[in-house]
Length: 209
Ligand SMILES: Nc1ncnc2c1ncn2[C@@H]1O[C@H](COP(=O)(O)OP(=O)(O)OP(=O)(O)O)[C@@H](O)[C@H]1O
Ligand SMILES: [Mg+2]
Image 1 (tube, protein in one colour):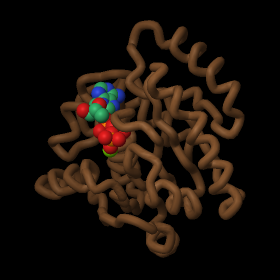
Image 2 (tube, rainbow, N blue to C red):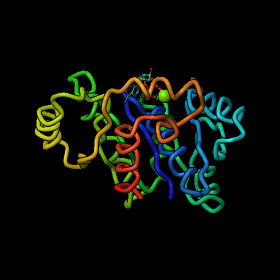
Image 3 (cartoon, rainbow, N blue to C red):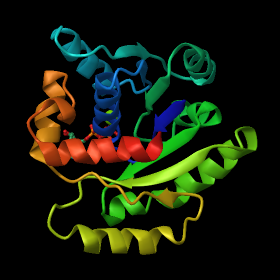
């Protein structure tokens, strides 16, 4: 299964969520490859840091840019899960990735700046479905303040009513320091001492796979 993390907005938590999903899948004994399609290489650097700690379960990584479609299809024949981290903008990687992916996860912060980019993204999703009619698209709220989660969710779901091509996931990722701390260690939050963050990632995996 190919799961693409993509958005038209930078800094909304694509790389963080993608690497955490990979770490959790690898811990469950799944065969997972992370495709870093962003020249910023956040995900590939995380894998390099992870490789330094031989106690951690293996996440394979491939960096691929421009047209990533054939690479994703090929990897899907070799791995159980292909997790793709796309650049934070409308890009060739995002568009070609969407023609091959089974699921697109669109992380967004509960802020107008992030929500305002969804209209354009919905248009891109509709275009991608001309080539890949089965593409499922899900909105994932990230970096949600831990206190008023309910209010943030209500506001986002009202907003997303205007974008029916993107289904809002009930699961969300809160703003937690442990996500920032785990990244430079090449770890996922499931490998840190924070059960709340680990539960968020496990719930997301349960929902997507
Ligand atoms: N749930 C979270 N809690 C706290 N900090 C987070 C969380 N998710 C991401 N961050 C932090 O926010 C910043 C942006 O996250 P990240 O790099 O994952 O976003 P991105 O969408 O991949 O950005 P880009 O579009 O630039 O690739 C990073 O510093 C990251 O550590
Ligand atoms: Mg990124």
